[in-house]
Amino acid sequence: MNKIKTFEDYVKDGILTNNEFDITEVTNLESLKSIYFINDEYIAIEQLIRTRNIEAIKASLGNQSNTGEYLEILKFEDQNKKGYIVTVYDSNALEQDPQVIKVYSF
Image (cartoon, rainbow, N blue to C red; front, side):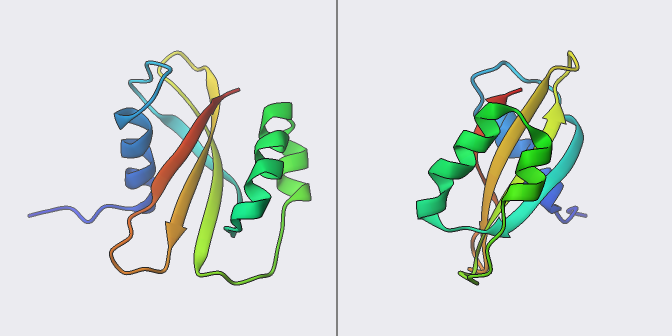
């Protein structure tokens, strides 16, 4: 019997499939923020991630424009307990699986 993949499964698979950090294990995956995806705002979001201030990420981001597209910002640790932040795109499109945008070393 095939197991139904969860959002977390898709995120872990995306991290492990294409990563520049030699990540072999994803642990302690935790959501920091879930917002509607607006392409023009992504650069500002990346700037917040690069500051490594998790509280600013949690508090500063937010929009109300329902685009049918979503941005998830999560943190996790690798097999060596090194921290990372990952951005994930998702959408209401029926055939769209969540896609990892980028993994940031934390």
